[in-house]
Length: 134
Ligand code: GTP
Ligand code: MG
Image (cartoon, rainbow, N blue to C red; front, side):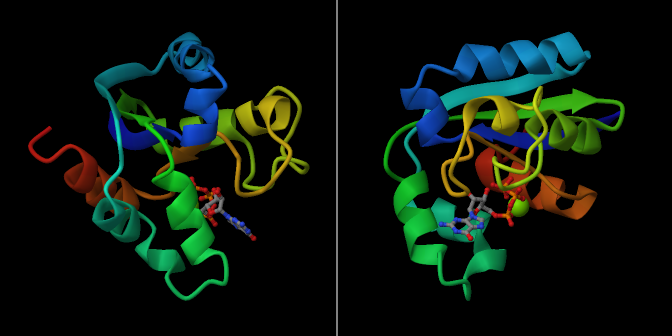
């Protein structure tokens, strides 16, 4: 099986969608291997989104991710990375399919409720960052 790093971002937490996201993960057949509600230090946010450091939205994204608690989790199962990305839907919520988390609950590209690792390399890097030792 495979592991992926999932975040319910501050918009999802403040809107009370943590249970909804966890429920969809569990109904899919994936398992929680770690789970924690936490405030995000700027240095963690910078490392997490390092690939976007040169993008015009980087500063805005860092402010958003550090604006309130996130629910961070390690999710495990066969093809967990692709399976969760499918549950999440594409990045821009107005293009995300109905029935996906972003398609069902979001409108704006920045405020898209969840993060999921996009590759095995990203998953390893992100799990080491958020849950060292897990
Ligand atoms: P993550 O799982 O959060 O990494 O999303 P993703 O892999 O679907 O998208 P990507 O890594 O390209 O972008 C990371 C995050 O930056 C997105 O989830 C959005 O929250 C935000 N983002 C992406 N594109 C834009 C944009 O054009 N404008 C703004 N303001 N935010 C963006
Ligand atoms: Mg990404």
